[in-house]
Length: 207
Length: 228
Image (cartoon, rainbow over all chains, first blue to last red; front, side, top):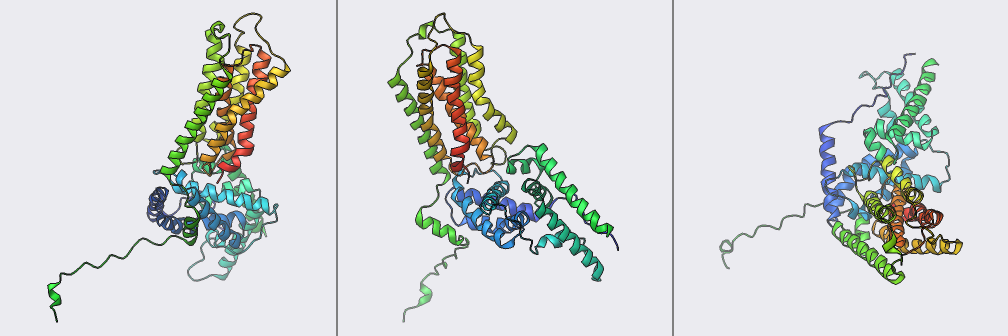
């Protein structure tokens, strides 16, 4: 069986269109902070999908993630006066989203995470060949499931550090601020998460 | 029939191209729209003014210590000027936005929050008594100073927590502890201008203890308000 070729390098997200959208969201949030309610719709449109993906990866549950996105956006709107024009809105949004997730996790008294199919699998898996090789798809799906399972089983601290660095594309400095931790701690947690995932994938390869 | 061509064309009203806000934005606006930056700025200035007024009234009510003229420069600098300055800096550091709008670097905030109570501990131990046979205080004095300093600090901490409601998206506990510690330092420094006790134990435990309690209060209680 050909080994899975899941890449876990800390690659950057797609460039210019995303950075333009992010910059537009920054400006829209600044306008909302000054009292323009309609501008928040632009913030919502720009950030909701990104936050949904982040919260899905943290919680493992798309339905919970959708609820948490709504809660996050509501809290951002209510705290709009504290947003400083010129600041990026994305790290702030991640921090608020993380708080919402932690509150939900505490309320659920750390119930085991529910694993559901997410787009995480598709993004993690090696791209199938254009001819639609069934075996490649199977390998990719199993690798994605292994990653999801490992993420669900690790501590929240490691999972959120890894997700922010690997999937959300934040720098270590930005992730440290979002998580309220030192850069060293974030790197360590992300590395530990990475090692756990790599170990799981290696087990998969050896079967 | 009149000639309609004589009527100049009126430009059609441009469609409102701004997208509608999400439903909850409209709902929130109907109840009470969240404060804008300008409104929060006014509230911050009001909170600062209220806190200064509160401390001034308390200080005038309690009065200046009778041995002020006998205090050494080192005593004044170490136990009044330095804690007062440190307290103000701590409050500013807690409230600042940082590069990402999430406050200063987490490690800096934690270290500053831990240092607030240490300022009085170090100053109280390091600064020698300004004169011999000064008042050393007893348990009652200690309780009086601790309670009074806390009372002086409480209103500034509470008004800061109200104004900064939802402001600390990241690091809320430590930033609130720093805020509480800063308010405690300011209160303790001002209270030292009233309290005539020069005993080191009294200064460290009663005055320094109030700073510690303020920091803990900020971190554990008021962080519930400052976190969005």
